[in-house]
Image (cartoon, rainbow, N blue to C red; front, top):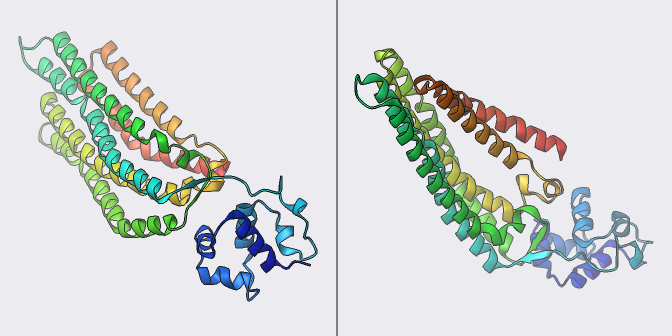
Length: 329
């Protein structure tokens, strides 16, 4: 008759792990594993389930002493083969994500700035008698918008190509070699305060982006050129806030991906997230509506409201999407 302690030793050695490596996979101390294998204590139910998943065996096999045969192992006699992330791979991934976080943040910043020239030139053409032709102003503004978006697209694609080799960390289940989880947890703990600070700063900056709009409405609500200048300033401020959000968000997510925590947990990987598709569709539709309405009505002086409303509604879209994702998983 094999007791739990004997089975755990057998399974651990079959997987080729030391007590330290198993402890890291279980997020416990080596002393805890030593006590389990020494029959001095037994894991709680959650940890027993985790051991079952980790070694590919049933909980009955682990808990019931009378069950000794290998056929009680789920699916086969072999431990499920999962990709193992080495320390070198983990460090390379964190380094790439840290660099590309800046690139992606600045690319998003360019996208936010892209309509400014269109807004300002449209306002100038309407406010200057005999000055800049509206069609020419709209054409130049669209060219500048397309250039900004094109540069941003190149930056997005470049960043995506650099992180592509690590895509499995987000989509697939994996195990980490000894020391990797400990290293990532330590770096995540050190970054936590900065992550919180960046989110606070980003929130304050984005909220302050509304100030120029209020100033413009109070000082001279009838002056379209002045209002467009204030709106452009609001875009600039909001863009800075977005840089803070994106940079810190990507870096923080890189730690969670390696630790398989939060939305990147093994359980959540079993079902695909719809978030990326929803966010992309939302902004593509918003941009199409904005540009389409502006071109058809030639009302650039008021169509900017579409972008403001979309920006205000976006946090609600994020919250609803995340709630749906969690419910579906």
